[in-house]
Amino acid sequence: MLNITRRRGERVVLGDDVFISVLEVSGQTVRLGIDAPRSVRVYREEIWLEVKRENEAAAHATGASLPADLPAPLKSADVEGTRSNVVKPPQS
Amino acid sequence: MALAIESTRFGHVEIDPDTVIEFPDGLIGLGGSRYALLTNDPESPFLWLHCIDDPSLSLPVTDPHRFFANYQVELTDEDGERLGLDDATPVDVYVTVVAGSQLSEFTANQKAPILIWGGQGHQIINQAPGTDLRAPLFAEVMGSSSNSAGDPS
Image (cartoon, rainbow over the protein chains, first blue to last red):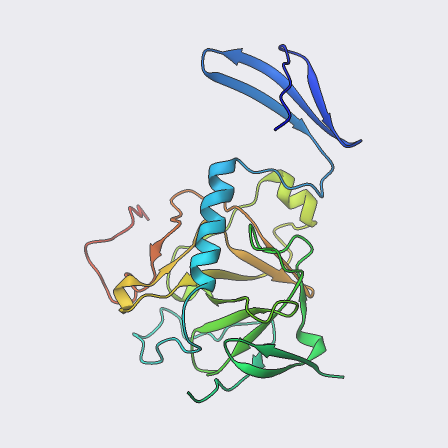
């Protein structure tokens, strides 16, 4: 890992358009300012990690079916808007 | 011309190209740039968000409003600008579902909904208060009195 020492007010540049500023250092806490193009997504790592884990957990569900015999949904409205493709699960 | 994928979950699946959803940033931590929504039962509240470029990647999703009466999505200003979304944009909202062996073990991720509009999709971090990474999916519809989710209204 690249290791860089910075003082308050100094910056690090990633590529040509991502600037990370050290705004404040106080005890164990560092406040960073991030100036990046809109297309760059910025997350706190723990949030990114927990969402990644939930996405993986959802994707790892086994089989092709989910329970059909469900309690009545709160609303009877169909899933609106986006069209979906009808598939048949393979018979196993 | 139909797109065909050899899904590890569903086998051979034909995708109507008009239903392909572009995910410029993929799903958080999972990637993938093109997905489609599949269903094997039009009556089911669940859909499968299937990656077109990775036949082994698919996630069950559902419309959160069918399970959580007061569910709301709030974007950061940065996300709103980045995605070109405002309150007037009609958007379909889905949440990922982690299936369990019993209904009580099913959870939905209220914190990172997937927004779909105009043929594109983005998974965002929801800024609305009180959202749960693993919200019990059936708690409200089964009338669980033990989980009123602290809703004052």
